[in-house]
Image 1 (cartoon, rainbow, N blue to C red):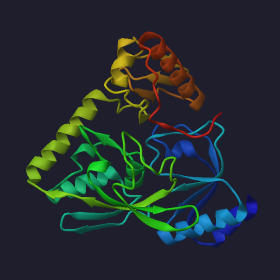
Image 2: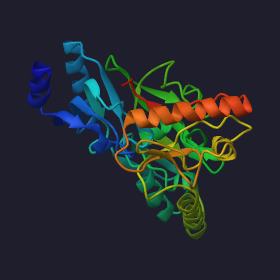
Image 3: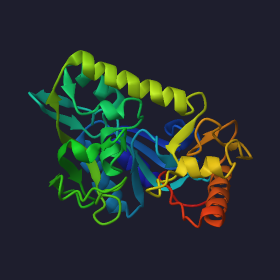
Image 4: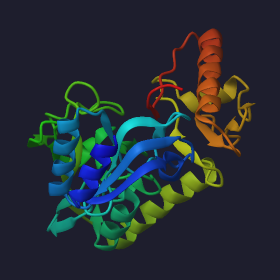
Length: 302
């Protein structure tokens, strides 16, 4: 790993750190160190990073803004690549928006609303990057990324880049083809927006933001929704009906505001969260005969 670290540093591709605590890069503030942490400052340098990693035969994975992520307490072996500064370009062409995968979705929604463009109101208050949002087809308030994506620019492990159409992305509820069937890194996207009344768009965003503030925990670190909704049921309602709101294991606690959120109430470990997830699954299966699946992405095991 020492040779790989030096090769990455010498390649001058951006930020390269050893044993970087990943709790600094997740919204739930949990996670052990990455052996090597890289934040490339351009797409070309991201391609260079993958080439160097491949030459060394080391495992790697990509993260965005860490908003839907649970990292093990013992960290991640190999290389963790963060998409952020340098992969956050933006270009507006009438109603088409070309945006880098590292761009903050909250920031983007705010910017386009002030331009009188509609389409991202649903994302108001959703932390994370555009790339991550497309990867998991993030959504809220009856809409999601599949409703506005024209094409996604995807980088694959072999260094090839493809533009995948909306249909080729095979979107469904909180999933896309990039997760398992055709793993890749969303480095950019073309989004179809619509012109509208600036006042109406800003008001809709504010309503969505207020709703999140009033119904979801904002005063504790969390990773967003923990479980996928087993439609037509809703995970939060099932958890609440089971009397599990406020249930706590170690520093991990089910939010008293919303049953589908686990918060870091102080000093929580990944094991605390995983144990709490397992407990909720067991209770809901026993009470409702419904198997809950996680929406939060769990990397590895402790």
